[in-house]
Image: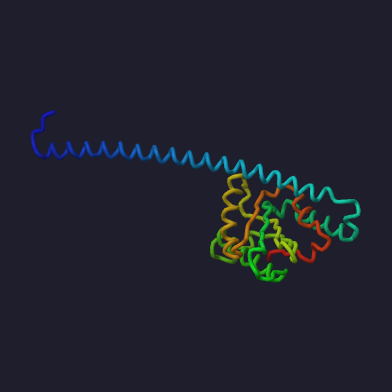
Length: 224
């Protein structure tokens, strides 16, 4: 190719630079796409491992309820109360879809926790969680709700929750991501805190969290 003047020379350089830049961008985008695929594959593998662990945990929870002896529920009025609550909370209109456990891990701190302080920590966490999902407008927070039971106040205190989350399309990846978010939020409330999150499949979660004979004394329900 013969260059007749300076303008043609400049134009030639411009065209060549555009070609080089496009090639570089294409190469970088290809590498980025490959990295995203690898990251997603790794995430999927992690989710698979998490699900296997949670499946074992779910079996453990279910067995803990179903293996109770015949004389476990001595108070028949209490049993009817329990059954009535479970029937109410598992109605389709309530849409409870997340099973969450918030652990305080009291061995890692010196504070004395009972029902009232634990309830305050739960409210603090719930406000943060609603803000994360619904923004800063508190009038929207009633779109989500929970039923909670505080357990083992004198030893390994923790809280079991059934949550009605605004997101009804809950898959494995959602659970994985949401558990990480909840873990961060809970640690801002209780530095030693850990969490366990699972999709609420059926009434077995309510069977489990209402298992103690004094569950109604330690039950907390969010404002609705």
